[in-house]
Image (cartoon, rainbow, N blue to C red; front, side, top):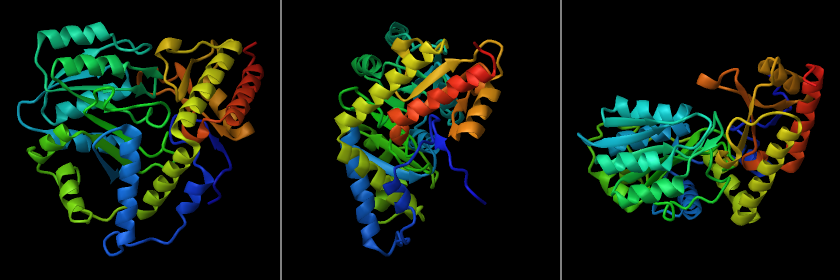
Amino acid sequence: MKIPDRILMTPGPCEIPERALKALSHRVMHPFFEEEFFELYIDICKMLKDLLSTDNVLVLPGSGSLGLESLIASLYNSGKKVLCVENGFFGLFGYELFSNYRYDCVKVSGDLDRSIGVDKIEKILDEDIFDYLFLVHCETISGVMNDISKIGRIAYEHGVNVIVDAVSSVGTMPLSMKNFNIDALVTASQKGLCAPPGLSVIAFNDKVKDIILSSDNKSFCLNLKVWMENLSEKEFPYTVPVNLFYALYNGLKVLYEERLENVYLRHSIVSEFVKDSLEQLGLKLFPRRCDSCTGVSVVKSPEGINVSEIIRYIKYKYGIVIASGWGRLKDRIFRIGHMGYSARLDYATRTLDALKDALVFFNYY
């Protein structure tokens, strides 16, 4: 099969730097019998600890969704109560996962096009006692960013552990778990971390580590305690996708060589450029600018045009892949991602020029 030569301007997976792509073709080290691979794994975790400002990091095979389920399964103890923030697709997904594991769940819902109200969260925490608060930092489908800094502070003042889905924000903006009072966080390899899909990252402080080590989790593959016990013996609980770890190592090295402050500045510049350009094209952004994610721009579908036709036109004429809506926002929006190696002004300019041509072709003007 011939792989099409295209540019990914979706909100994950994203483009990957050549260095990380080449790393995929290296010979496979044996994860059990070559200690150099264990050393590489530890180096990856050290870089991620520094990136996230936290005490503990595990990197597991699987998507960010698998990482989140592993964390939820590993924290389980009978009778624990969780407040789940739901103002988008992945907030609802998190709520359903917690419910499936028989946590005592309370859901607080918000509008799809804006951040959850901080006052609403504070009022609920004032009136009830919770063990955990779960929220999504950047809702990839809607492009809404929740204010984890303020919510984390309020939860800390109420003695509630904060769990964050940060799959679409890590690597695109500063995110210090210690500064934001985040106790546990999940992200993945395929967005801001400049690597292919297939690895999940679970980060947590020592308080959460103690909870995991004493939990009632009986599973094996979704058990972070099993991972920690094996790693303490310089072993892995099962065979891991070695070459994906090579790619993640090199993707992280690319970020550190650019310097993190420059990485975050680049993402901010590209994000503002894309959002400004979309408005100049006469399109309407879905979330308010003040509530928008850095790594993705979400646009309301143009009046009278089938958005799937725009996406198809750009893909086949220009070789650029952008994303449609999903779930409740299917056919109502389309999305341009600018995360990781896709957050480049040259890629953004080519994408916006292609979009302008598509709008002309479909008689938007």
